[in-house]
Amino acid sequence: MMTLSPNPPERHPTVLIIGATGGLGRQLAVRLCELGWPVRALTRHAGMAQTVRSGRKADAGLQNVQWCLGDAMHAADVAAAAQGVDFIVHAANPPRYQHWRALALPMLRNAVEAARSSGARLILPGNLYNFGPDAGALVNESSPQNPLTRKGAVRVEMERMLADAAAHAHAPVRSIVLRAGDFFGGHAPSSWFQTLLVKPGRELKQVVYPGEPDVGHAWAYLPDLAEAMVQLMRLDASQATRMAPCEVLHFAGHWLPQGIDMAHAVCRAAPHRALAIKRFPWLLVRILSPVVPVLREMLEMRYLWQVPLRLDASRLAQLIGPEPHTPLDEAVRASLQSLGCLTEAGSR
Image 1 (cartoon, rainbow, N blue to C red):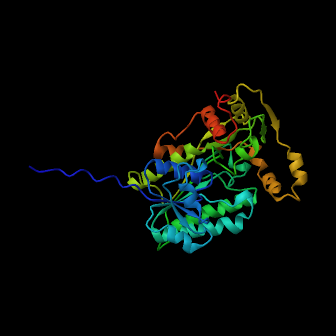
Image 2: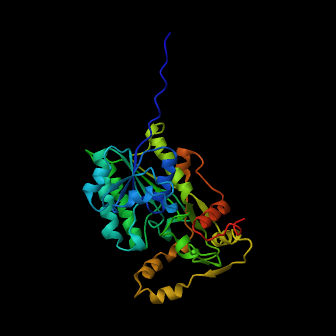
Image 3: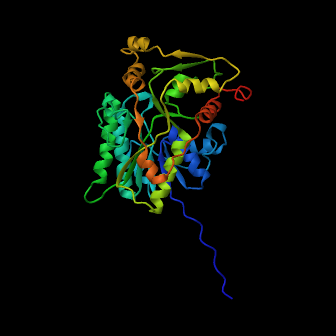
């Protein structure tokens, strides 16, 4: 009698994440580990693997990551970490808005060359910095890119680098750019949500909102954005739908026609405390910006809180169907709990 051998286990793609301790990079690493995908992460810190495996609460979910010692500014380090991987997620950003041209472009260039040598598809999280007010109220992938800021100009260059790499005659590099609104979630260290609206580790007493109350604003909940990236990688790996060599997509996330509704959602998460909603002191920022570099960088981005820029995610929906979408109040409550802003009693 013939014995049928069991089906071989499904092979999951291997993913290298550059920036796995940042907001989206960390969330994506956690999700991929949950799914059993092999995950590598590039780190400059020799003790990172030991720290993660020690089981610290802040690093829960990263214990199965393979940490590769190296620097994203060193091409050889990135190339070594990328050997044999199927995807490279370039989620590294210069800290505190500074030195973007000197850091962001070389780091991405190294990731492009690593993708070229390994044959991996490169994934770049994008944002709205590329666009100025003339992009229109509903921004699609081909809307005009006339950024008002230095960081926006760098973002345009980064995406152009990927388009040029995909069009290379002899060694093209496949890529995906997934643009999204402002991040929020339990671990988004550079986001407006946790650097301005609320204070991590402190019980909620007020909410600071930097935008015009009646101007729409786009937000991206990190677990939803990470899940969308997983679905795109799964789709590309299966080759069920052939994507463009340089695919540019928009993630709709949470579009709030009245931007102040994000502050109201924070207030609803603490129903037993009446929270004040305060305006951000932009005048003071303008006064101090000549002597405080980070304030100067923040002031540059103010227009994004004064102009409604909604992302058209039609193309993404064609590829993956309805995008992952956690209800706003649920997403905000989970974010605040992870940030230590809600007591257990106050979150009910």
